[in-house]
Length: 122
Image (cartoon, helix red, strand yellow):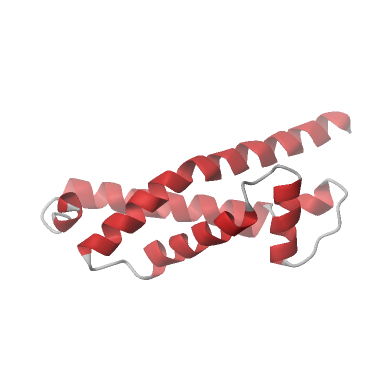
């Protein structure tokens, strides 16, 4: 938390935090809003609502539990849209975001592996 309180005084730290928030948001957006809605159709599944697609992605092993995916989305929105001014809240969001990175990387690698598998089969 003390590092977050220093963001106004440490330009390098502020840039690294901003870069993390930006990359975290972009990765979550790319996976959830661009890749995941189209992947079921690509692999021969029917597409549905976002929640149904998440449930199917979980069942197929592409993502960790869909409810945690939704929580990650809320966290992404919190970090991106409400650039948090209370240091404790920002520190908590950043720490939670850091913990979510592994799940995003997992989802990206599983979805890309599924695409690669399907391309090789064709």
